[in-house]
Amino acid sequence: MSNTNTPVAANGREGRIDHKFARELIAFRIGEQEFCVDIMSVREIRGWTPATPLPHAPSYVNGVINLRGAVLPIVDLAARLGFQRTDPTARSVIIVVRVDQQLFGLLVDAVSDILTVTDDALQPTPDLASDLAKTFVRGVMAMEGRMISLIATEAVLPQLQMAA
Image (cartoon, rainbow, N blue to C red; front, side, top):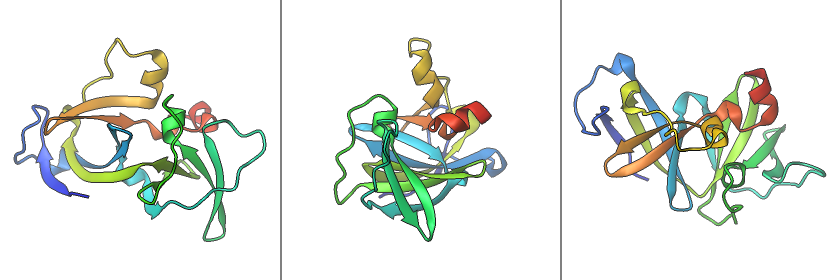
């Protein structure tokens, strides 16, 4: 995992920016695509732990794990975004996030980076994207030749989306 601490502005170039307007994001891979979440919503990153399936759970919910005595639902983010389900490997990780008071895990292929960006680096989700895509993707950034989509974590679990 590389660590990109040099801030990136909207033009995608590295440079000095005012840190009051910068935010840090955790970038990760799902297949060949890169996504990110705001680091402020991340509670921890842990290796893959097999989940206990739940009867009648949505297809994108792998199940639950025990996280220090708490029951933590695990969402296969690839499946939730409409991609093929993740077949966990030794490199797979669970990104534990908090939205409001709800903790849940996002199963992803690998964490790739920590990014420091300004809000103007985030471009709106293209109009050609479906409404469903716009529900899950808050925006897209072009950085260092990569396209990275910012995930709207509050949309990942349906009950959180209704509360938001």
